[in-house]
Length: 202
Image (cartoon, rainbow, N blue to C red; front, top):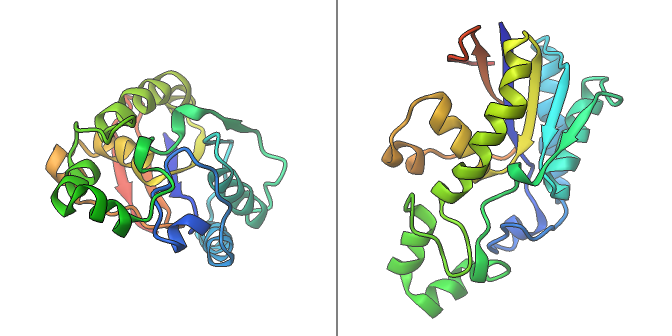
């Protein structure tokens, strides 16, 4: 049986400024660094160890991954980076303050873009579009390692992880849109030999 641990990156500079981030590449804040280090310490205290780590092509997730592994004493672990795990692309919203976006397009329209499953913002991706790149990558690159009994860390983003959680927990569109993925909070699953996921708590 393999173990899968998902962690959303620590708070970024743009999270702190209330900006749509997407594929833009801001750094972690000091609090974000603390969140990542604490996630690593929490996993270490609970006895977790990893055989491989996956992260996105964006520095906030890569740094979170590195900080977690350092806290675990696994700084030399193999880390695989791929843009398939990147955050949802917010298109024309990227870089905008969320309040300014509401002023420009209206509360209701921005809410639809943020919280509908399959309606993308202009020039960007919906959650469905994000899932359409995340899930094939999981099936091809991450799941085989889990089926081999390996323990796998994935440090990524709110919406790329939402896509994984939706599939792993067999959630509806409404359920996954309502689910919050907290920064620096490990989400843990035991993965059976058939690929079935059983959520675990720390």
